[in-house]
Image 1: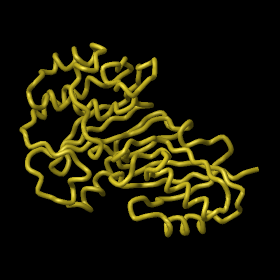
Image 2: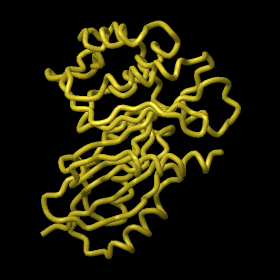
Image 3: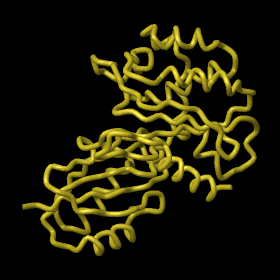
Length: 267
């Protein structure tokens, strides 16, 4: 029987055209597959928990694949990290039971979108946050962010490239907070529409700059009309913080700890 291997990766999405393999472009999955096939001398088919888009970062991307090779896990992890490029690294590796899958076994995902309000003076943060020089109404944005929670039809947040007929999504937590001088939009859901989190943020900015009050935001959110919900926020402010497995609750604490370490490194 083949071994079922799980990897947990972190990567800077700036230099990748997303997670998923695509012809003639650099993707995280493409780089990973090539390195694994070279090390293990067998075909590899990886499955990621999240198909992050071009420019999106990940701190806790789970990946599963099956192998015949009997290489010890410690040796595989050490060799893989040695051969991976500087913008993607292995956090840890595990051997899993048959039937476990990084995508299908996931119960929820925690994303954060980071906004820098005011002038950006740190050159090392630009590729990880969306800088907005206008003043933002934080209290109004906090109230609007709560409207995303629950099981709702988010047709108004479904982009034209998402062809799913069903746009009902369950959001467990939706919260805007301040952290290290940044606005951090935390959202936990079982699944998301394509570009959904970035569309959420674009809509929150409309509230922040005073284009809408919270009542107008809520009316547009449940209108089912994508054209009423503002712009799509740029990809580089979005981070996959945490993927949850085998749980009934999905606290923000673990993801926030990851985020705090990220800020401490860049401060």
